[in-house]
Length: 264
Image (cartoon, rainbow, N blue to C red; front, side):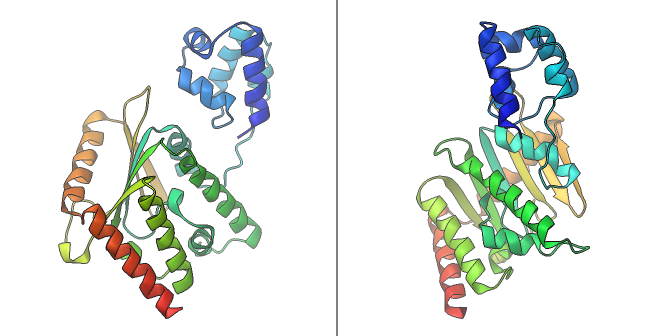
């Protein structure tokens, strides 16, 4: 995203004597959407940019110079990536590997290095940088509230080697011990659970209804139909109710990390 674009928008808004809320009301957008654009976290649509130009009397500058989006993510994930940066609460379920916003650099590099067909080192580096940028959503000590539900397979799947796994699992432990995330593990002994067939992200926002994002091989979908989102929330809650409590989950994570360190 372009911080220069957002900075210029902010300058024009302030020169016009408008608050973010006043501008949002004029252009039929939300205040938080304006705030995200000014902070460089979002790029407005062409139609939004045209309305901003009209409201601020800036000709066609904002609509003509929309910044390109260079995030190295799959097309189907781009909208979900933007929403992830705006959410006030995120609940993740991971079936095969650690969710992107929680990955360490070496773990991310190992995951992204498994692309098929293979990608160049340069392209992999771009994808790693983008994934680490996503992780900055955790830099704020309070928001978003993040809950993580991990199938035990995530801990047992050896990605990048024992030392990479040990570092990654220790990272999860530190985040949980600091109170930044809540983490629970669904143990193998549980058997079948309601989320076994997919990965899932649930997101809540200040100014719009909650959404869900599910992803499979070469496809991802945002769900915004209230009935579907509610059903997925219920599935998550049911699975969470069968997961190990926080204390036991952390004990399992520590033991897992220690085991990988022993292999190293």
